Amino acid sequence: MEVKKKIVIFDFDGTLTTHDTLLEFIRFACGRWAFLWGFLLHAPLLVLMKLRLYHNGKTKERIFSYFFKGWTEERFNQCGREFCSQYQHLLRPSTVALLRKAQQDGARVLIVTASIDRWVQPFFPDVEVIATRCEVQDARLSGRFSTPNCYGPEKVRRLNELIDDRAVYHITAYGDSRGDRELLAWADEGIHIK
Image (tube, rainbow, N blue to C red; front, top):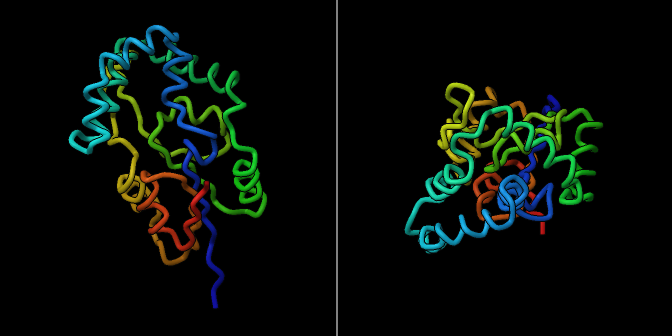
């Protein structure tokens, strides 16, 4: 019997970190007052999203656009690196240890997240990150995403595009939220982090 290759997949927000990083990143990048004002302006949209009357990805893109449209790519990337440097305390040591153990055991390790790749990758520069990506035009952020929001079924869709022969792998996935439900069900072993 052939031994299957191992792939170990981690969600980022709430799994490798203690909570969602989008809000923390916006507050870090734009300041507390701009953060509060922006979310006050978007409160009706956020309520509709929570009631599942407006799409999660569209809500996120509109908020992202409000805060970051027009930023230079370099400014945004630098902010992502600085955020990583100053917010290491957000990492969940127990789950990071699982990631490092999987690497040591020779598994292919992936992070699959709805967060933006530009602030996730600096936390784990040696790990392949599948994430929501922001669109850049003429070296500036357009305010739109260049990929669908990597949430829920989109995580599985992206992985199916990446993994050519699913049958030769044993896939373990770690997640913590409703956005990971499909990922955990798709994996051979889905582990819910509390």
